[in-house]
Image (cartoon, rainbow, N blue to C red; front, side):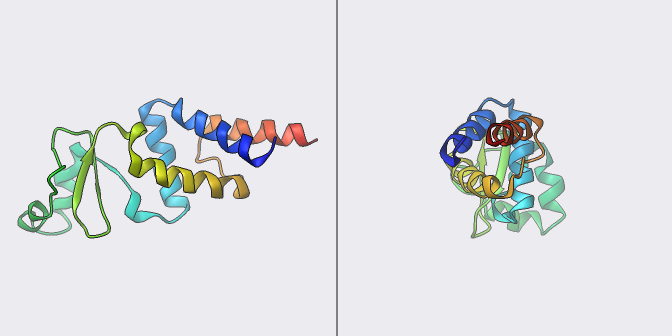
Length: 129
């Protein structure tokens, strides 16, 4: 299996995951590849996580127009402005990071902590033998 096919299989596996599996794999990729600015967080932890970092008056001043407490997740952009999202598997922000992660993961044989992706690497290795 060549690199393009391997990338396609990994992306298909990520897209076929449940939301929880996808987020776990994504967060593992952020940790592994040192992308702290691309981390997403559950909205139900917003007050706890952000309220302990700085005063809420500052936090709320940095909410963007696209931020909604009704969304499932939130993230901070490079300017420390808060954005929210619900459809993580169809988010352009996450798609760009995932693409970068997968490119690197192929070279590292990094499986994002996912048995599904580990299986893809095993298949590719078996094909080479």
